Length: 246
Image (cartoon, rainbow, N blue to C red; front, side, top):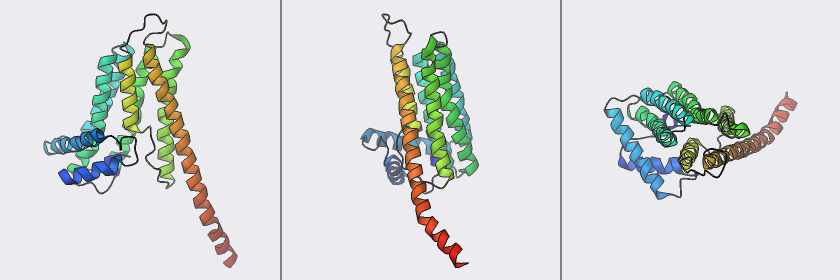
């Protein structure tokens, strides 16, 4: 879920501080003071962009283009540039919702567009790595699995919300995935010529991304099923009583 689709957003420095605290609560970033400072700065910057006439949809599409460019250059081994483009794409993804709220253009259709673009922006840099490792044999499965893990955790959350289940923040959301992809690309700059595989530390980072993605998906699925089971246990006796009274 993005800032586009969350009620209660207000503009201003005190509101930004309150909103940033609310958004980071329960996430892995809550314990890092710097994360709160950066988030509040992004809110203020997004509001300034909105006043300057920048549109939320424009930022959303820019996020997609930057992610596509990251995948393209990653396929050719330009990992430093790819990392910068992934960060820029993630920043646009953060700012689009802020601009939508600041310009009073937030909508369910905008939130839907943002979610779809997020999934593509997650996959495109990893698709570039699939191309990069295409001639390396079985290791090409690692970025492919990372893509699958990202899609799975996002789908579980979206399906749970569609069933009316409000999951806790948990982990491996968009911010964590962007951070891990960026870090992995940076590790790709470390040369280990003694190994036969190119950029082996990049593969380690992407493998961690894949593992955490599936763990997060499994954990989210577990919580959703427990919540659904508890809801069914509460409503089933009521339904039986209603049927017996007829």
